[in-house]
Amino acid sequence: MKGVNVAFKSTCENYLFRGIKIPNGGPSISHLFYAEDAIFVGEWSEDGIKNLFQIFKCFHIASMLKVNSLKSRLLGVDIPNSELHHMASILACCEGNFPFTYLDVPMSANM
Image 1 (cartoon, rainbow, N blue to C red):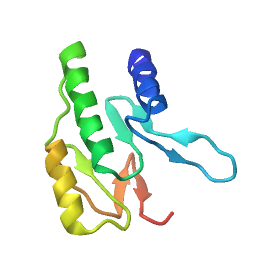
Image 2 (cartoon, rainbow, N blue to C red):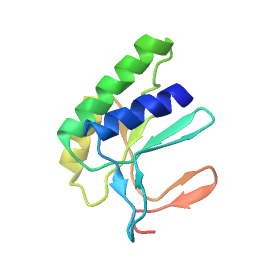
Image 3 (tube, helix red, strand yellow):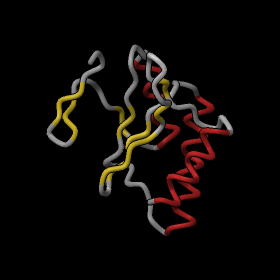
């Protein structure tokens, strides 16, 4: 996964996908990897979503591993349902909603 981290860091540095900045001088977070799971966290923009889709395609070409769109979810905070649906269709994944549980930890839109 180190190669994936380096490639994704380069993507963020070139503003193809913008992570979120943690308050009070904290770092910028764009992705988290755990075992076979990946979570991408970023600013809401159609260009960012399209670039993320291209990253998934490049990952598939380079590794011969494909993102399972049936298990993938796109979530947005304070995003209209119509826009969430549109962006999920770009990524060919399902729409998710809050609250949800990840690794037995409850997640909500306002933590």
